[in-house]
Length: 114
Image 1 (cartoon, rainbow, N blue to C red):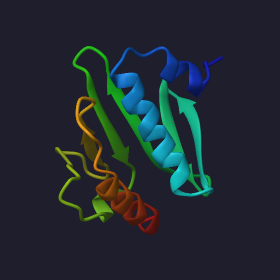
Image 2: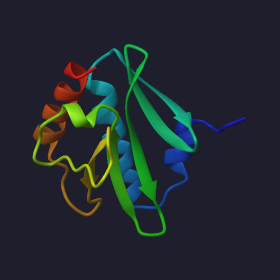
Image 3: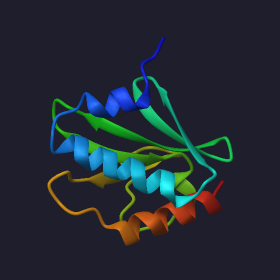
Image 4: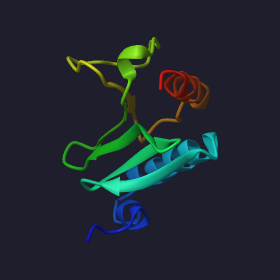
């Protein structure tokens, strides 16, 4: 059985833990229609029970990003495709402040792209 999403976040080291917990809070507070579930050892987020995005963290290189499922439908300067056909990612630096306005705009666009 896969462990809880809480366990996933609480098992991480700082500053990544705080950064990821803040991202989690932002995603869940964006809409009451957003839910989360842990799959493949990764937090996944759904809007109206449809896959919206997931948070990816690679502890070896301390890389954090949010991957948006229908990213190819979203035009935003902060989103990168990096060779992906459908998904686009938003890179997050745990040592810097998160651009909440930009993330909120991307979330709005992602919900509209569903």
